Image (cartoon, rainbow, N blue to C red; front, side, top):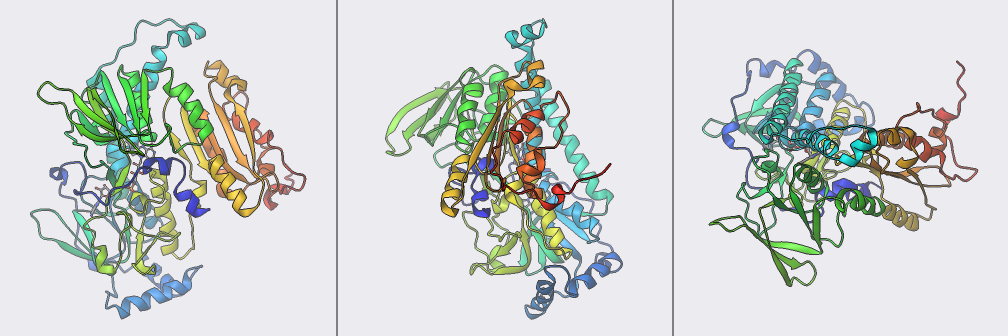
Length: 576
Ligand SMILES: Cc1cc2nc3c(=O)[nH]c(=O)nc-3n(C[C@H](O)[C@H](O)[C@H](O)COP(=O)(O)OP(=O)(O)OC[C@H]3O[C@@H](n4cnc5c(N)ncnc54)[C@H](O)[C@@H]3O)c2cc1C
């Protein structure tokens, strides 16, 4: 199941079409943004006193499921000549959401923690991803609503033509990123995480070097090292990015201009979200998709419905089964040129001329220069190989003691909350409690209008697994058209779909397209995470009228065989 989780859903949409070996620079932001950190070196060597001492004792004594492993790790460090007293319990390389989540949890567990950041705190999500994109999507949602005369008329509302101020919209996105970056930084400083500025690398087992251009490198030791260096946009060969007319999401989020006609190369969730923004702000969009259909990462039925709701009624056309082989930025009065070739035959199909092209063809792990070769680790297409506990594996497939990798850099599931959850899971292990994150329970969402969300397997994945393992699969569906709250909002377009085992009541996957789908998915993802069956949750009561009743209906409409199980806890009657 774990292996399937890696290549499913939005995670696969992010990296569906080839992930480059590695990127060539620290991040898309200029290195000039690497500002001196408030680094306090005083007393670093003394930190193994106090709380850390308690932790160290805990670790030497076998504790929890990894107790035996802990013992081995201490021994291994001595054999390798690695340091035996440490500046830190944990050093994290990369202060994106993954590193941040790990750092906060590490301090909560009493671990002396440092985080090394080569650019700005917050990484992709905060500065160039989730946060600014959701600010733009908030605007696109409102613009869409205010310009939808039919929708407003149905509600009895009249408004004058809605307009927007591009620079103010861009400022909203930028200000939000700045605010969240500040929050993240403060949350770490407040609890005593040392934020060390510079590009970090592993120089030996349990030893990290970091430094800034023009300054001498510094070396620190840590009992455990977590790599959380994230990813950068993947640009296929033949595409010339100038950052003005041919650009990636890094540039697009700055919203420097609104092209009249923009080609979006790649129809994964990033491309789809940008199509929502651009069409709401007045652009015409052409999708270029290498695979045979749009939105290849989604459950096919949801993909079909998304096409009907999010593509067909909008100023969007598309070319599928074609590669953008060559893209030349606009220059000398000529527009952007895009040479399309057939994905299979590689025959040239046509050349498009557009005002701009957004390259949304996935993300590459950012793992170059990390010094992994010094600990015998060979990356796979740039991704750091890890086991199910995020422990790094060496070239022979053996665990590298005291070295973990979380987030986009390991490619298991390239989403912000997955990165953070992996970080927390690693810290749990370091603190002596075994923990394996069930990636099948990690939800994903695409914040279009309406939204799409999912957790677990798609229907084809579930059917393939069922055939292999010999069980039956059933599908339940409910429509937003039957939901009072959705109808009150005049937002009845949408579907929720659950794939499940009728014999056991196990939920295999849930997919939602509709108003607030990104919030609704958590009832299903929590159920999967807690191991609840449909029988456990179908009697749960939902407030009326709420959108959550869409899921209530979904669970109730499942047809279970008589012997389908109720988990022990849920079966007990509770007296009140
Ligand atoms: C446009 C866009 C929208 C997105 N929207 C969503 C969304 O809505 N929801 C969602 O869940 N995900 C979303 N994502 C994906 C999400 O941003 C990533 O999955 C997430 O940021 C990964 O977190 P991370 O901590 O692994 O890496 P990152 O956030 O990339 O952070 C890595 C950090 O490490 C630093 N670093 C790298 N190398 C070194 C080094 N050697 N030394 C020191 N520091 C280093 C980098 O500067 C960076 O700060 C979006 C991505 C994009 C591009």
